Length: 196
Image (cartoon, one colour):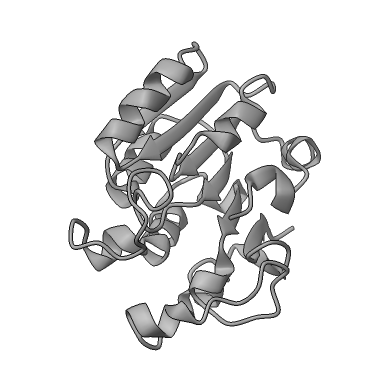
C-alpha cells in the first residue's frame, strides 16, 4: 500500500489549490497522520472502522488539529466534510477493514461489501459536498478495482474475491468537476484535481 505522500507532493498540492484541511478514510497504522501532523493544516481528520485500532490511534495522535473518527468511511466521511468551511485534500484509503492491522485476511464476514470496498460511495459523498468541486481527491490502491502494470504488481486475487468489478465509477462520478489522472506508482492510484 502506498502512502499519500508517495502519490502526490502534499505541500505543492495544498499550495496550488489553497487547501486548509486534510481528510483521510482508513487511518490504518497512522502513517499518513505521522507524515502530515506538523504541516500547516487547520484541521486533519481521519476515520478508522476497527474499534481497537481507533483506540490505539487516539492515544498516538492526541493533538489539537487532529480529529479521529471511529466508524465506516461512507457515513463518517459525510460528517467529517460537514464541519469544513472550505475545500480539502481528501485521501481515500479505506478498504479491507483491519487487514494488516487486526487480521490478515482481505475479506471478512464482519463487514458488508460497501464497508470492504467503500470507494464508489465515498466519491458520491464528495460529489454532493458543497466544497467537493474545489477539493483534491487521491485514491490509493487502484489495483483493487482494475488491472494494470503497477509498480507493486497487479492483484489477481481481485476477481477471485469479488468477481468482475465494475470500475466505471472511477471515471464517471467526478467527471463534471474534476480531471482524473491515474498513476501506476506503488499499487496504483487516482488523483482528481478541480477543472480549471
